[in-house]
Image: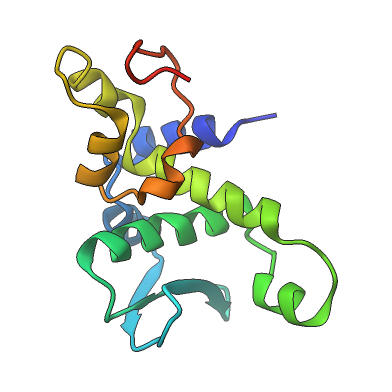
Length: 152
């Protein structure tokens, strides 16, 4: 079974980037910026066209993370309708959302970026901030080779 990290690494290698907007473009995913109120974003399909909806009022960092999160749903849970499950069932979507968050974290701060900072005083939290990962999501990063100051 392929891990989330493996899925992300393969995607980055295939697309030649970890930029979620560039990946969406390469994979023919329509990204729409819309007024969504207090919703950061969501993923849908229309006539088999994948669409990521992102709150136009979010800052650039939130939009980048949201795009990565929604790509997580596309690649990890393509047929799961979380709004339907949330509204109409007692099914817990916590695991699905956590996996999409981990996908975004692995995408935005892949191991090769961490390796660039291994000989600097920068912490994982500082790197996460630079790359648009919310501090509350940093703990989802799976480090392959744990530098002592970033280790788990």
